Length: 291
Image 1 (cartoon, rainbow, N blue to C red):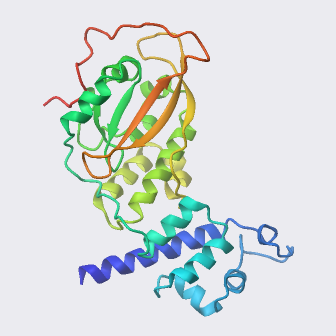
Image 2 (cartoon, rainbow, N blue to C red):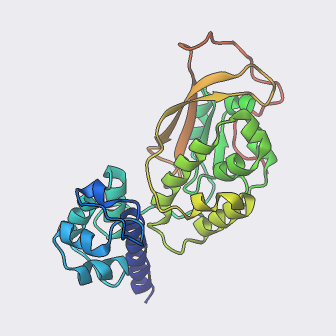
């Protein structure tokens, strides 16, 4: 019974995902003439069905989560909807064609000692190990030299990078242009959350995001998915040092908690002279959360 319910929820998730992408396209995007008589936004279901080589009834059932589909049909629909590689892989995963299930949000917050040792060696590069729901699991000396110390945030779901960037003024002072980073991180999170419908950890996080920033509800309701794109950011240390440019990258970990990633910020020495700031004496030796 539980397996049937999970399969039904995945079908509904796939249907909602396809519908959201259909509604973003205009007829001109797929080579169809546009008319002023359209009342609904985006493409019509019959247009997607015709371009994908399936019946209108079948495509309607697909969006409603009432049928399973073949890989061939889903590939055709993905082409019609102009899904990029990340969105296409996500649709395949929801339909059961992609290997590897996303990790649950509530995995134990335990980090391999080797991870802590590794990021502690990056003395000039702030780095943090993030769990499946982007909870901060471990961080290095350089991280707390730039960002507020995560040890000061209760580890009850609030020690979460998305929550802190979206709702904490101290974090927003470090990264004043936080919005595009949060959007990309949330898109990355959705690709995991959609593959585990009903996961309480992901649902609690989204509820907290909506509570913290209700005016951004369009973000939290968005069905977009994507991989976090490397970027250059300008960080102003919470210790009052001169702003500095960093390259921000999200790295998959080869071991450790399932679904963990490392967010690392590497100083951009080519854009400005590097400064040899010593770690603060009150910074912890490593970011393993204290009891």
